[in-house]
Amino acid sequence: MSWFESFVLGLVQGLTEFLPISSSAHLRMTAAFAGWQDPGAAFTAITQIGTEAAVIIYFRKDIGRIISAWARSLFNRELRHDHDAQMGWLVIVGSIPIGVLGITLKDAIEGPFRDLRLIATTLIVMGVVLGIADRLAARDETGGRHRAAEQRKSLTDLSVKDGLLYGICQAMALIPGVSRSGATISGGLLMGYTRESAARYSFLLAIPAVLASGVFELKDAGEGHVSWGPTLFATLIAFVVGYAVIAWFMKFISHNSFMPFVIYRILLGIALFALVAAGTLTPHAGETAG
Image 1 (tube, rainbow, N blue to C red):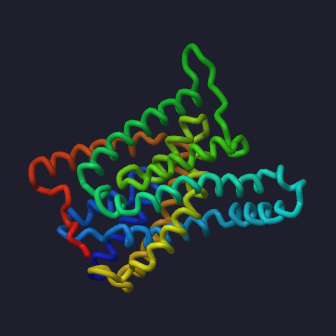
Image 2: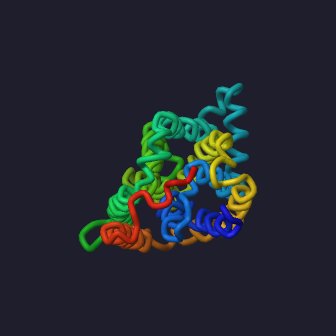
Image 3: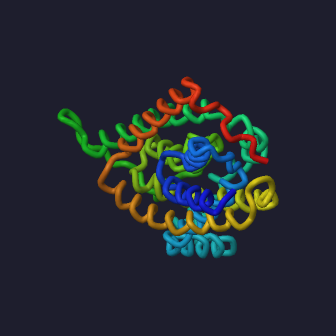
């Protein structure tokens, strides 16, 4: 991998990680469109450490408060009813599904799941799901001509059951094209949470899963055509760009719907199907990467 490739892929990772459009799919497609070798699951997982570092810094006050309350609640029963302490446990519970499935499906994640036809399918299907979830959220927030607006849930209403359901949604993102934020935000909206609450918990929930995945894949870094230098450079680029994107995204969803992302996902999925059908791209383009 050249330094230019690592710069472009790091930029793509930073731009797409927090948006509900799938960063892993965009890394895969960018390489295929450019005629480069697929950077692989290890490269993707490691560069995601950069974007998660951006999450940690952006939410540093929330994270520090949660970790402190959770740790103190281990020795103080009274603190176990504190919202921040409960959030610590809920993040742990929500991380279980992706941890189990990530190890179980490792070979599929690195192979069959990177088929461009599957990516096109998940882009479209999850785009429709996100659109439905967003529409339901908008209906509750605005009400209608014959119905009053309904109060949506915030993170103070988060239960163990909801946390686990969030975790199951997050695990779906092991398939490129699903999108970690897209799946968890859609799940949150369908469970009745506000857009901001769904996004905030989505980002917090991703931290242990992404960091664990990145550390786990470190052993495979530097193998094949992807060396350590370009991988670390891409991770740095992803961190800088990712921080800017998450700051923008949290402001955007406070006043806007997810429909622009829904339309983008569906059009991109259709275009990808068309390119594969026309023979412009093969389903496994670039997968000769070692």
